[in-house]
Picture (cartoon, rainbow, N blue to C red):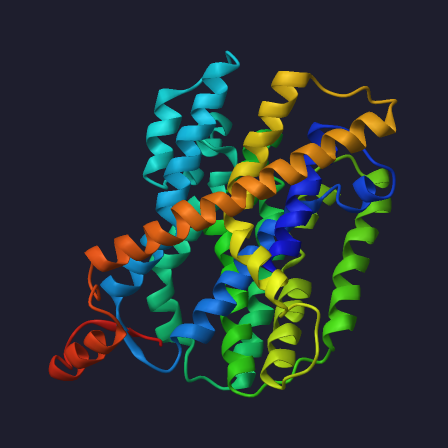
Length: 369
């Protein structure tokens, strides 16, 4: 599923940055909502993984650092190098702040997008990771009724934030506050947590996986007439709605997929190539926009009236960025994560961790596996 979400984000950038392909571009015109999917999925997977055992907080945070920072740092350096090659301005302050993963907190588009524009979401994820031990301690072991109440409260809070943000006059600041600010987007992460806990404890989603997938597709199709009726600059436009209101449909989709896996139902998502593409999706997300800049900088933007030229450019970017993502995963992301894990707490492996936990029951920990 990570591959499909990343694909939607990539097609969104291709449609807006390279040129439109009829049918596809209209459907993914707000495909940036794929990031919302990743926020929900992150909460779901972490809750599923860490509910039920005790893992020290420092171990959890070190694992998360090893997971996201090495590839982020490398692609940020690559992004800055591409900007320099094509004589685009580079903010040293923005690059420096982005390496701390705090850049999404700054309501300035130059800072928030940092050295690698795609990296803003990792600033959000870093905040989610810091909050996760406390969130899990508060939510684990509750009843399904409590989790449902939390989910409803999260959606109500999202609507309230959306309406309150309408009072921000500057559209750029308003967009940053709603779309980038970690304190706003953590609501989607919490929604994923309660969905993960509920499914793990036996909750059966009301929709099957195919129906949930159709619901997600229907949501994106509904955004098309919405965008024709309301300009994106309006606070109640489809642009903001696509980010903020998609959380529940994505939570249902992830829950339905997990339920199908638990019950060994046949899906098209668990084959070896789908899993492999999912592994590459993080690198793909971080490099695809860089590849777009390289291709457009070298060859120029295709004629907007030439569908073959646009489709050809799309194909070059898709293939090149996917191959690069594969290389980065195999030779950078995966080995770097393993190496950094060995350098930190729990470097001796899970068995050593459990032995240490048994010998030091008072160690600060979070509930997890």
